[in-house]
Image (cartoon, rainbow, N blue to C red; front, side, top):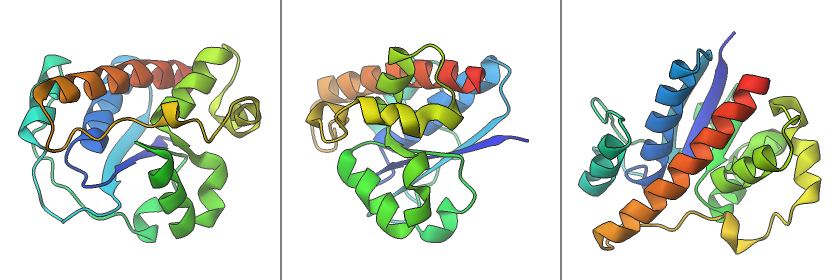
Length: 174
């Protein structure tokens, strides 16, 4: 049975589509049965991936074809095994919409930090391992590149790409 992952940011045009497409591609390349999609806490439905995020995504070998943004709802969160958010505020928004998912909801950098700190941690042990980090650390947030220069998109893309690699290794252990 596939592991179901949702990535979340604000507009679902920059960070979460990048995380979605990179995670799906790299999980598939690793032979993992993972489904990934994304949504935004304040997204308009039907918007294409931001052109700078698309540039970054393609630079990492990803494909933005067929992407369409959508607003995050509690229905979209139903049945998720893992929810990865861009920031702590997005993590809080997910937990407000779906309180029972609190043990399955992390910022993408938080999940990567946990995965990198313990080579034995699995998806099932992620919430227990969370006790060993400061979940209020601002360094767990991926910067919002919207309206910023291309270098910010590059920087957030590198953060997300590195985090995705850590999460793929975590999922492979699960």
